[in-house]
Length: 295
Image 1 (tube, rainbow, N blue to C red):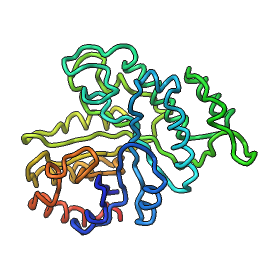
Image 2 (cartoon, rainbow, N blue to C red; image 1 turned 45 degrees about the vertical axis):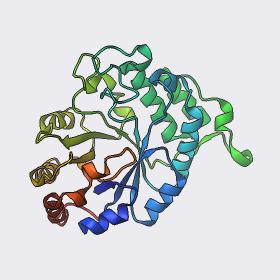
Image 3 (cartoon, rainbow, N blue to C red; image 1 turned 60 degrees about the vertical axis):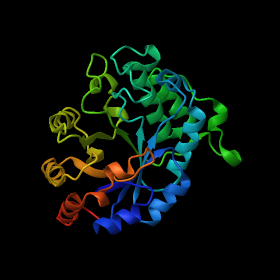
Image 4 (spheres, one colour; image 1 turned 135 degrees about the vertical axis):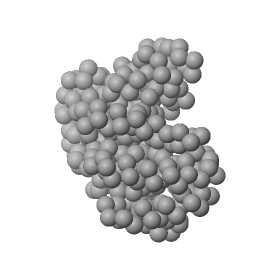
């Protein structure tokens, strides 16, 4: 499935001549966005970033009110929703990275272990279940309970979050820590296969270089369906990079999603916009028409 990061995915469809069935957004689950994507025949890929909380605080339940509300919306929607919690966690620019840009520790509250527990809590809550099921899953993970008032059933219904089985968790590190120091490798943030449905990587070509070998390593190490959750040439036209990316996807059979960062909520419209890269756009249009890339 091809996808796009752009507030106006329909415009990207028109630009490329291809329907993009994945739409990646940032910040939180929004019923409005889910409905818009569904009406357009897209699956929502939602980046959850509980701002203002350390990994340890999330693991202890400080962000539960937000998470439970989003989990209810995602599970009640009735269609598949992908959740991407706290991506690029091993990049120093991430609020949940264990280290600073200089490689120093940010403390126990931001350690890889704390991130693992935070991710597990998010996964358990987003997948839903009865209050008793959620309590059991959290206990097995060594995590505190959710406050009962957050799980109260409306109109006398059973307490909990109605589990749809349609919420999928995407774990999305960088292929290599930035900085590449001890405690900041992808493995330091791995929450375990039981909490992850899809594994992702973000790959940009910067100054003519892209970390293909690091993406290969992620693909080989974590044997889950694979998603390239963000990609683009960084600030220039690079048809060779686009050709290589589509070729990589075709040769890695567990890859289920390829999401172009065209124009997002975190700046970069002119840096990544495919309309500003005519040779890359021509290759993209040609490659997207080939067999294997679904509507």
